Image (cartoon, rainbow, N blue to C red):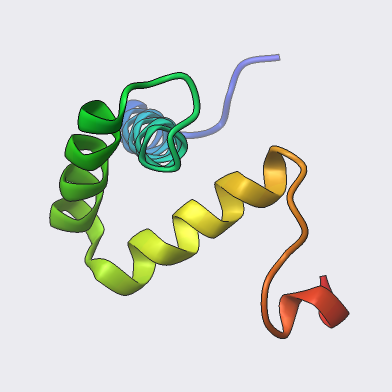
Length: 79
């Protein structure tokens, strides 16, 4: 079935998806998964520059939880 969205709407959603994938990859690298320490620092700096320090911390925490770590803070109780 053909999508009911316009081409502009589809392009906007694809761009948002690509941005999310990029930010998730940066968060994972900033946590040190499969990269050197220098690359992790660079990824963290790029992540902070892209979204700010608070959002970067949240993205890094989400990446840790996705990889199997226990959540921190209130998220331990409320998921």
